[in-house]
Image 1 (cartoon, rainbow, N blue to C red):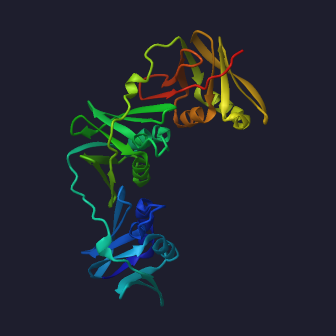
Image 2: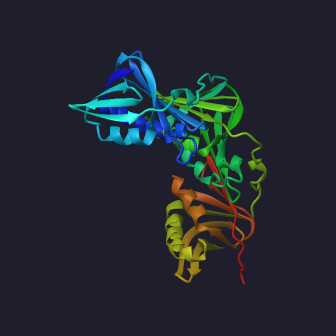
Length: 366
């Protein structure tokens, strides 16, 4: 293998694929990047067997071939050579990197031990704008579980039906649902996609006005964007029926400024750290009192609301509320309540583009 390429092109490609390298793995092979020189292109591939990212860049191929190098070391070296034109070639069991009048060597690994990647995925697909896809994931993925004991909840359920896509995430304490229109789909289907995969896809998307196509087949997903291919395993198992979790009737509805409520909660959350992030809402006609009281201090603020129905006192983990209110762009939101121990639901002022559910924290109101 021997080729010429630009240092900046190679460095950018490495930064794309290295996201697929596992931070903690007993298998040294999975810490590597595979380089393949063929035709007029250099292809880089990294995988941890759960997710794979492949990036192709133009290069002057003087001799076709392939090799396997330690990813982090290769990344750090090439990052320092972004302004150089590079010559890469195999020198025995090492990859030689020539730049200006200098050169460096990186030991290679046995390429035969590297996992093979199947890109023959074409069964079901949907296409939507890159902006809508980023919004879809940005408004839901943060609600996925981080608990390895509940692996199915570490993913988002993607449902394609009747020209729309619905993304669902939950962790046992909160639920996020977001809907977006599709430009095209091959029919109705669903899949459970690791949240890590979805976040990595959003990082590949650089042009909001362009389209992105997600392809799914059996237990695999594939996305191709700007000469970068991402392939991921899907999660297998039974996802919770989120529709059964959401109440259909409510005794209390308030309309509130999203920004004013968020600012008030964030201030209360500063002292709530001393009480496991607990903040309290006292909902009355015309206002909701947001308060937090701990050994660190006390905050009590009133936020104007429009109340329909019963007054109620309820407490929450402040983080769950701020996570949600930060990603919503609407000026006003509706908050639906039934009692101090029943789930709280947040919906947009108009339409049904999203829905959030949060379980309250039991408190003594006496």
